[in-house]
Image 1 (cartoon, rainbow, N blue to C red):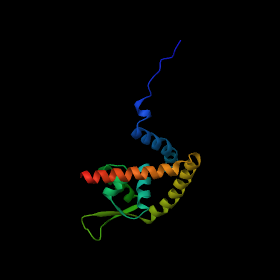
Image 2: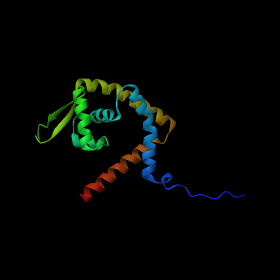
Image 3: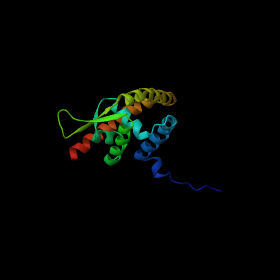
Length: 151
């Protein structure tokens, strides 16, 4: 008796689904490490983004994949916990820049070490990871340029 040939599911070959699913399965391992340290994913993302220096709330929201009102609530909690401070921009007083507070800097150092260790484990299991990172950066950059041109 012949088994009917089934078509592959659309999502199994759809780039956006593959990107999201890959991120989810690989991130889940690290997110568990964060939870064991009592750190939420949004807090980690804010700290990791601020590792490059102060940012506006808008930039943080975009980098952390959060809506701006949600980002503001996360920052409120982080400020109360002594992890970040918000200061008016020196050049443009309409802007508020989020800075790491000393407690946030201390926490970030430990978390960056854990993130780098996790990434090294992932890369060891998947030797093409470096090429994939380059491809993803290119995809993000081109898409951002395209969106700016439309605006």
